[in-house]
Image 1 (cartoon, helix red, strand yellow):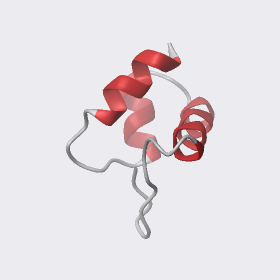
Image 2 (tube, one colour):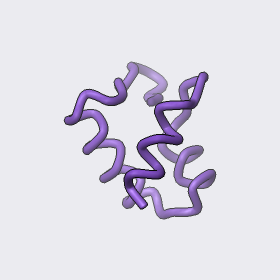
Image 3 (cartoon, rainbow, N blue to C red):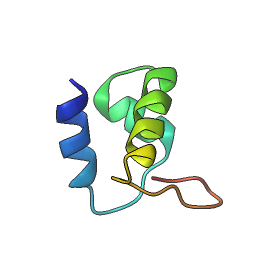
Image 4 (cartoon, rainbow, N blue to C red):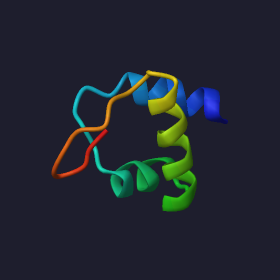
Length: 54
């Protein structure tokens, strides 16, 4: 499932919050947080400042 999420997140054109992404993908915020941390570590996405968006 992570591969699908990775592909879809990279296709987003506007930044979204962790909560918004969790709702879109139908997962818990904790799961989304793990996926986002992995994507940041891989250099796929960037985390912006306040408000925090990806």
